[in-house]
Amino acid sequence: VQLQASGGGLVQAGGFLRLSCAASGRTFSTYHWGWFRQAPGKERDFVAAISWSGANTYYADSVKGRFTISRDSAKNTLYLQMRSLKPEDTAVYYCAAEEDPYPGTAPPTQMNEYDYWGQGTQVTVSS
Picture (spheres, rainbow, N blue to C red):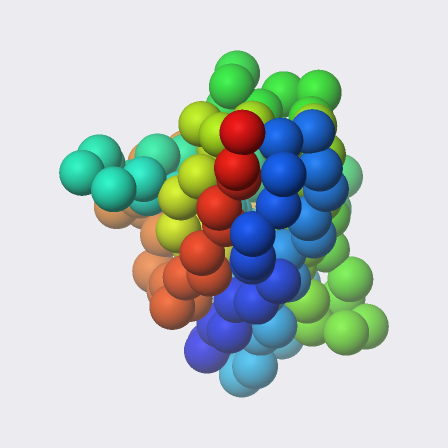
C-alpha cells in the first residue's frame, strides 16, 4: 500500500488542523493505522492509532482529548483532527499501516510494528 500524508501547515497555538493520509493499493480495511510524529532532534513518537475495523482508537497521553483519529473506508483515507494545538505539537507527522493484523489484536504503538509509512507532513504551531 502507498500512503500520502497531507494537511500540515502553520497554525497559532489553540488552533485546529486536520491531517489526511490517502491510501492506495490493497483493501483499506485489512490494516491497522497509526499516526506518529517527529520533532527536530527527537525520536519519532506514537500519536494515535485506529484498528482495522475502526472500532478501537488509542492515543498518546500528550494528545488525549485534543486529537481524534478516524478513517473513511469509502475514501481510503485516514484522518487526524488536531485541536487546541500547542507549540510542543510542532513536528513532522507520519501516517503508517500495519498489514494483515492478527485478529483480535490492538493496533501497535511501536514504530517497528508498522509495515508502510507515508512521507510526512509538517505541522508548526506558533506561540
